[in-house]
Image (cartoon, rainbow, N blue to C red; front, top):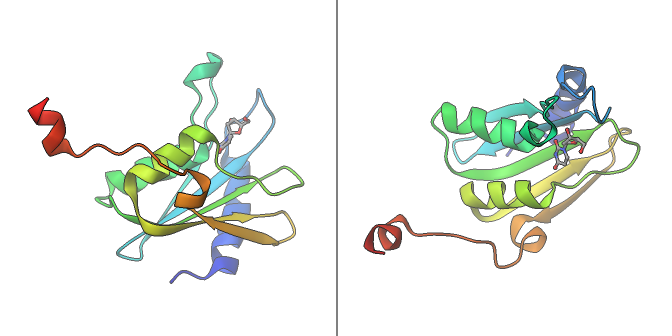
Length: 136
Ligand code: THU
């Protein structure tokens, strides 16, 4: 299992890499795959606002790009004073790749943490079995 203080330190280091000139809110995320490797991402905003990307989505893209499609832990940190939890869309994105009991850890500016399973954050998340889709 990953070491939360080490990941938290890396997330703090990455926050200035966020591209957040419109909201001013920097977010960094890490996702730990079932193989133990950790992938990072930051939010990437755009002048065309809806084109902006959340940090969790960036981290998931990095994981999938490197061949990881099963997540067992997700970490989120931001420049805001309080703890930040993934937005609704990111909960669904995490759910897509989560293993049962996948834990989301939110990390505050002073190192305080809170955690919850993805099932608690997104009850009755939407899943499709590709075999069923092909049959429709
Ligand atoms: N943001 C994330 O990166 N992750 C979330 O789960 C919530 C929001 C970003 C999007 C936007 O760039 C900024 O935070 C303010 O909404």
